[in-house]
Length: 442
Image (cartoon, rainbow, N blue to C red; front, side, top):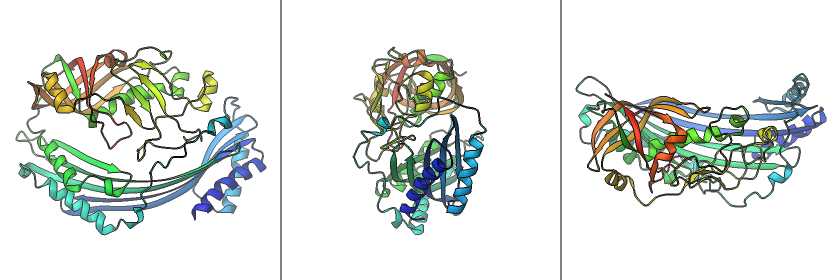
């Protein structure tokens, strides 16, 4: 189905829904092409290629609401699907808070080209994908100490995603984006019989900006080999640095409780904290959907609300919640946007090495292993692995340790933010340093 046909299907679905009795409606059509090549220990393990398409329809009928979807886009099938959906919606309980956004929220959409689609997407060949995964493995097996490597699995994946959205109260929008990712995972044999493993990955909107295969392969192998001999560290209160790649898990525990749903359902430890200090003054986060080539970039959100920069935390003070139309009405709050896009940090002036040198003694966390965080209370407990830091330098590997606490106390211990935002995530976390963290080990 051509692009204009996918847009026409969304427009027709909205018109048909209104004709069959809905007072309001919105439709989203989509088409996604995914290709993945997996290579393991010198052999091709899997090739996956799939194109999916479908239509999602939101209906507002006599004070009732439903959200339905179908993958059958034939006109006659859609006609039956929409008619049945309107009838079924009438059988649901009324919900007076369910409406489309105020059309004024569609206004002010940025005119910028966010550079989300690589025009060379279609030129990537099966031969290129296979060559990349082979090169990643070769690089992994070329590092010093590679004789300890048990297995290497490598991957190349790319996606082309297209979306069209139409509402009955005036919104119409479309987007196309591409992404390319490569990765490697290596497992090694420890003399004590354990089989530690680690990984590396990288990606970009444009294939030419994906990190080099050899770099990713070597990093995965070196990280896995660095885990040899890891032991539990001592239980103590220490300074903790968190590697930029691993650090993204921590702010995610803050952003979840900022959602309108969590607030309205009394599942957020950040309820009522707007305008209050919830973190150290060194923490400033801005939600910025307009970053060129960003993995979270968008001109409009899932409701069609125009995307805009939004301060979330300024110098430790909470400035905004993520509130969509529905929960905005229930909470009697103005809608902002339903969820995060790109998180932009106010960065410090030191890279990881300089932060460790200033830290002198503590633990560098390079990964979180299991654990949980309670969005209602803010209590958390996380398994960690990484390295002991002595004299400002990385020393022996440690693992099977645990940190725990409460986010409202933990984030006030943030002492430093690095200048090294992780490029392969919408969270963009830099290295983070926390003082006075309780580690449980031996």
